[in-house]
Length: 82
Image 1 (cartoon, rainbow, N blue to C red):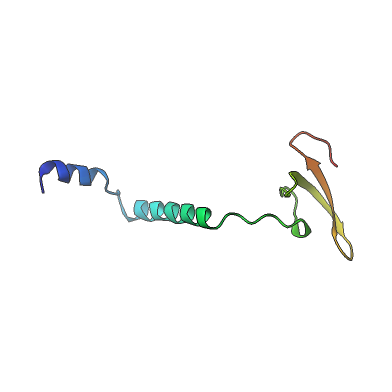
Image 2: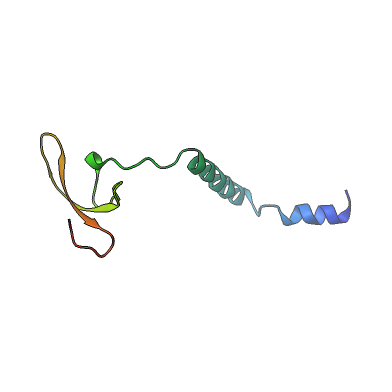
Protein backbone atom coordinates (compact mmCIF):
# COMPACT_ATOMS: atom_id res chain seq x y z
CA UNK A 1 0.00 0.00 0.00
CA UNK A 2 1.16 3.45 -0.79
CA UNK A 3 1.32 6.25 1.81
CA UNK A 4 -1.63 8.11 0.24
CA UNK A 5 -3.88 5.05 0.62
CA UNK A 6 -2.89 4.61 4.27
CA UNK A 7 -3.68 8.25 5.04
CA UNK A 8 -7.06 7.93 3.29
CA UNK A 9 -7.93 4.79 5.28
CA UNK A 10 -6.89 6.38 8.56
CA UNK A 11 -9.09 9.40 7.91
CA UNK A 12 -12.18 7.18 7.82
CA UNK A 13 -11.40 5.24 11.00
CA UNK A 14 -13.63 5.46 14.04
CA UNK A 15 -12.18 6.91 17.22
CA UNK A 16 -13.31 3.85 19.15
CA UNK A 17 -15.74 0.98 19.38
CA UNK A 18 -18.48 3.21 20.82
CA UNK A 19 -18.33 5.46 17.73
CA UNK A 20 -18.57 2.45 15.46
CA UNK A 21 -21.55 1.01 17.37
CA UNK A 22 -23.33 4.39 17.27
CA UNK A 23 -22.77 4.59 13.51
CA UNK A 24 -24.01 1.00 13.11
CA UNK A 25 -27.21 1.81 15.08
CA UNK A 26 -27.86 4.79 12.82
CA UNK A 27 -27.41 2.65 9.71
CA UNK A 28 -29.72 -0.08 11.03
CA UNK A 29 -32.46 2.37 12.04
CA UNK A 30 -32.25 4.03 8.62
CA UNK A 31 -32.60 0.68 6.89
CA UNK A 32 -35.57 -0.31 9.05
CA UNK A 33 -37.32 2.99 8.40
CA UNK A 34 -37.01 2.58 4.64
CA UNK A 35 -38.13 -1.06 4.67
CA UNK A 36 -40.89 -0.78 7.28
CA UNK A 37 -42.68 2.57 7.16
CA UNK A 38 -44.36 3.67 10.36
CA UNK A 39 -47.82 2.16 10.67
CA UNK A 40 -50.80 4.44 10.37
CA UNK A 41 -52.15 5.26 13.83
CA UNK A 42 -55.32 3.47 14.88
CA UNK A 43 -57.98 5.94 16.14
CA UNK A 44 -59.32 3.25 18.51
CA UNK A 45 -55.97 3.21 20.31
CA UNK A 46 -55.26 6.95 20.12
CA UNK A 47 -53.67 8.83 23.01
CA UNK A 48 -53.20 12.57 23.62
CA UNK A 49 -50.84 14.21 21.09
CA UNK A 50 -51.29 11.41 18.51
CA UNK A 51 -51.76 12.47 14.89
CA UNK A 52 -54.71 10.72 13.21
CA UNK A 53 -54.86 9.67 9.53
CA UNK A 54 -57.22 12.55 8.63
CA UNK A 55 -54.68 15.13 9.88
CA UNK A 56 -56.35 15.90 13.20
CA UNK A 57 -54.51 15.47 16.46
CA UNK A 58 -55.87 14.06 19.70
CA UNK A 59 -56.14 16.63 22.47
CA UNK A 60 -57.78 14.38 25.03
CA UNK A 61 -59.46 11.02 25.38
CA UNK A 62 -62.90 11.78 26.84
CA UNK A 63 -63.87 8.19 27.53
CA UNK A 64 -64.77 4.89 25.91
CA UNK A 65 -68.11 3.40 25.05
CA UNK A 66 -69.23 -0.05 24.01
CA UNK A 67 -68.04 0.38 20.43
CA UNK A 68 -65.58 3.29 20.24
CA UNK A 69 -63.60 5.87 22.22
CA UNK A 70 -64.69 9.50 22.48
CA UNK A 71 -61.84 11.82 21.48
CA UNK A 72 -61.42 15.57 21.65
CA UNK A 73 -59.40 16.41 18.53
CA UNK A 74 -58.01 19.55 16.93
CA UNK A 75 -57.29 20.35 13.30
CA UNK A 76 -53.88 21.85 12.63
CA UNK A 77 -51.68 23.49 15.23
CA UNK A 78 -53.77 26.56 15.96
CA UNK A 79 -57.31 25.46 15.10
CA UNK A 80 -60.06 25.08 17.67
CA UNK A 81 -61.10 21.62 18.89
CA UNK A 82 -63.49 19.82 16.57
